[in-house]
Length: 103
Image (cartoon, rainbow, N blue to C red):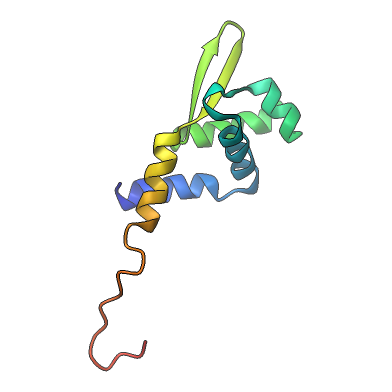
């Protein structure tokens, strides 16, 4: 994953409401949740929810599927795992410091 892609995903999750919606979709699993149900569970107005879902979809963290009159939203688990792997990939690898630089 490129840093610019990771930054966009992290920015989308950087809002309390979007993080809450994303976590709700993660809890729901692959079955997903309808927009109406998300609104009810998150106590969010439809226009506000649409805005936040739009940001999560644009970041590639949520997918939407039309089912008749409903729109089912799902966490994009592959994107979530890729983002977490990107954040962790250099864990404890050390930092190259110039000689004489304080740690």
